[in-house]
Length: 578
Image (tube, rainbow, N blue to C red; front, top):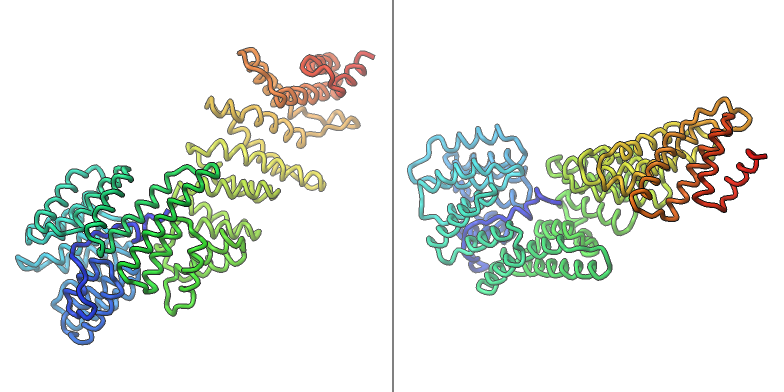
């Protein structure tokens, strides 16, 4: 669900381990970044910017920390300061290009990258390296461009193992380039046998091949050899969570197994925080992202409450609070409030599918369907895998008797032709509209729209050529179509001339479908028999109303063949024979 989050970009930055707590050099800051000790790196770099204000690289790496913490505007401030204090340091121009790339302004980024690389020296490879990494870590990665820039960097400095690691990451991202990625990581290991990132990269290749248990074993082996290297615990946590996400959860035992696996993942993430020693608000935000993906709302609540009153905290805190309000507290009005704050505070490119999903559900539950439905549609556009969540919301509303709300929700997946939920959604859409229409009819209100919408939805099933749909939904769809048309018709013995027989074709087709089932060796269930009785009796009554006693007699006789003790059919037969 959170494919654009930096949490799951698996930043495989090169490096060794963090030095002593008193270290204040640029090299120490770089090492802290590579070990994902971002708060420590930030402190070192802030000190360096104050002490060595004319060193442009200090500004660049400080900006990098802000980018990692998803604070692009703050990063841009430091890149610009770096250009003012050290105009010749082109890394800060690269940094500003990375900011543009993070904001999906590709053309502006390309202009800055071209400017930064227009007059590089023979051995000046770092700008090329960081541009390559930027294309890997962008919201919309461009792995081909990453390979291009990283290859240029490698041509200038073939001995920097971090370039080979980055090339491996780019090839992994491309898909279908696992062997090339492996060779790049192996090359990095040959250059630096203690480079943990290269081994992590190899394990990620295995994980992307869906061999999660094998990947987990590799990560755990790395952790046993390098217990003080924090990033490997994050990889373990993410792998454990992916394993959990693929477990079935259809019964209590399976759900318990799922929760156990998720708990392991959460514990591993806590270990990651412990080893990196980063308890900053930014680290807690990344932890909260992880809990969101794992749907661990109880723990998320604790983290969100810590973050809520932190000055200048990431606007994503409103996502966390909104999710808690909707999923845990069922306080939909509060959910609307929090998601409203999120949408007002966060840039649109930082909003994700679940923001739109749960904001939409919150609006729907508070009765504001008009605002909720467009948000649900956006969630589905951003991620088609939101379909089951939307369908479940429709079922909840249906179960609560909120048929108009259920119909509005079901209408979203019911319009997604070609998806797995298309026919099921139309079936429930038809039922919801039928019940909403029936409720209106009982109140003597005009239900024409709801009933016609029900017929339209059922018609999608009736016209399907899918055997599975035929077996599962056709009889019910015809049955409900018949009754929907009955409510649109005028069935009144005092005005027989007004009866149009709108329902007759559906009931006749239903009779044919059920008789075919019996002819082909099937057996009628009690439900089938009830459907046949209602079909014969309703159509028989229509012909009786219209004065066609011969046809009416045939239908009531058919009822008796199916259910000899049916009192209604017998009464009409007695009338006709009398």
